[in-house]
Image 1 (tube, one colour):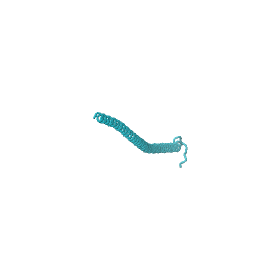
Image 2 (cartoon, one colour; image 1 turned 180 degrees about the horizontal axis):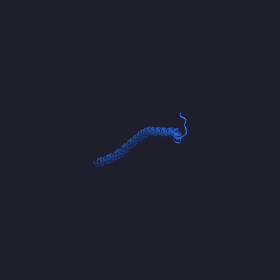
Image 3 (cartoon, helix red, strand yellow; image 1 turned 30 degrees about the horizontal axis):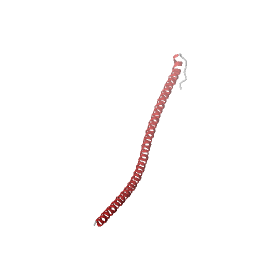
Image 4 (cartoon, one colour; image 1 turned 45 degrees about the horizontal axis):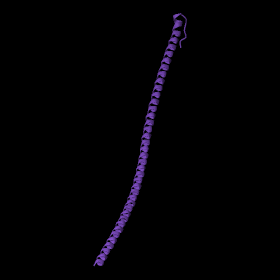
Length: 151
């Protein structure tokens, strides 16, 4: 009975050792599986981070392109406004030049009219003077008693 008890205790000890070793193997396997799951999760997160970075860079490139296009449009609009202002200024200058030319022509016409009037007045005054001189020449000989030639 003692041998049977020893055999039974020996079997219990062996079973307990096997169970302890199996538990160790199971724990080690679970640790390996947990580590493998962690590595898979890390790889997945790294891939997500890589995709997010690529998406961020793509969005940044789009934003830079939009900014560039917007700036080009703004510059084009500024150029258009500047061209419109230039044309408006050219029109104003042309209008002012036209007004100045009209004023110059008006002054020239007034001056011409004044000179013509003065010339006419001078001619009229000269003609009147000539007429007076002729009359004096005609009347003078009569005053001094000399015969005159009548025209």
